[in-house]
Length: 451
Image 1 (cartoon, rainbow, N blue to C red):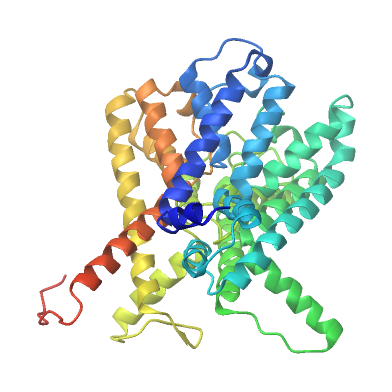
Image 2 (spheres, rainbow, N blue to C red; image 1 turned 60 degrees about the vertical axis):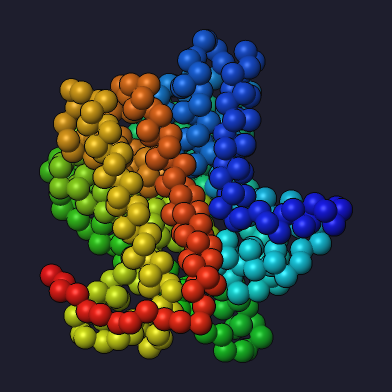
């Protein structure tokens, strides 16, 4: 790679790399799905674009039936899900690392994108991401293969691979009709699917630390988890256990009424795992009680963990935000979690992510209320949160969206997948510019009335 190209890349903002990667992937996916070999019948361009965007953003929400695509079309969807799942920016940096000798500017840029402190960590993490993804998805496909083969012997292998990738990447798409309703009694499929979603949602950084922790027993060395991993583990299983209990209480006389006691518990746990970031369902979402859907809004919005296949605003963001509230109530000048002080810039970042995300959901809901007449407020709010959180579950609105509504949802899926980080990096660059311009002096302090 020439020095000119490297110099040009040094002026390439991280936000642009993310956005260009997303748009390029979606456009290529749309073109591939538009080929006659990919479809069983004519499909409108906006629906092809929606399908490609939903797959690349690991949302798994479609305006057409998957049966409208051929095996080639399903392979295209599989590739889009895989690219979106392991992270577009991770794949971009991985490919660039083979052709470019990254200088210090690029190392800083990549560190910002993946929230790591050194380029050495980035390179080893990217290699780990690739190997870990291949290993887990292969094991997942082999685990569900016997069950799927009993139902669909002709395409069992492809269906198993598709299901494993969809689960690990937290897409929540099934080639079987009605999501996983067919497998509500199959504890094997539910367990493997939930496990794949949890593994993908915990994040690659967390799993690397877990493997280091396991290895420390062999070498008889003490290994301590980082604060990040502790937050992710406690937060993830805290959300899943709480949501599982609430789902079972609210649904055991509703959608779980026809199930046995043990079966209803298993389905409640599965839905708690899936609704957090995946999107698989074992019962029709439209039949769930309103309190269940209301709880689902919150766990979808929180989502998974950083540098994972899941989306949402992330468990760590919510934890820092709650710690900030606790510090304000306690009248402390610093934010602390488990004996560690959180950097001020990360406190600002957490607050900004939540504010920007809530603001975008508010705008999306407002626009959909205008364009999608005939639907209630809650159904539209649920659709907006689900799209932004890249979960893809719906009370029925998705396939009834108008053309303008589809465009809003496409934008919401893209912004939900990369928007908060991209916008924050752009704001950070602007802030750094302003700091440089105003270096040498500070403004006088003045207090304002709050509350």
